[in-house]
Image (cartoon, rainbow, N blue to C red):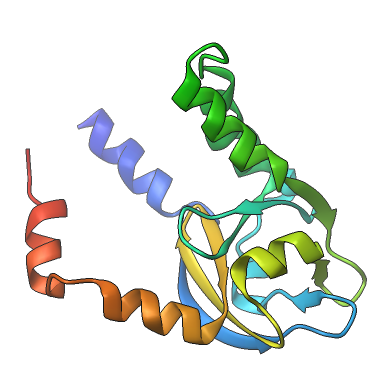
Length: 163
């Protein structure tokens, strides 16, 4: 019973997961407004500070700083710098890593290297994915979805099966 109560309390906390999507425009200085729905879910520990880096696909990952420190940094610190694959991953991930704080208009400055990597020019598809946001060129995101060869039902059956 204690574990179930803890699970319920955890679910009712301010933010456990980002979800939903929006299409916004990036301004000529590479600043992007973060949607209100996502800003409302920020924990005070983040201090309106975000960590950004390249995504696994052709997108930008944006983590609130508190979640980066809790979820990402420990995993990076546990990688073996003398293992070629792990070292390569660290280099590729951290090469693009950047920190920024929301300005007075709730905008983040997205580094040009990251917008270039993601092919973002003007429009940005902002996707909430669990503990982070993903920034996509809308056309690239549509191509990514079209490249998925299995149906949604097949993928759901594989990844959501109970163990």
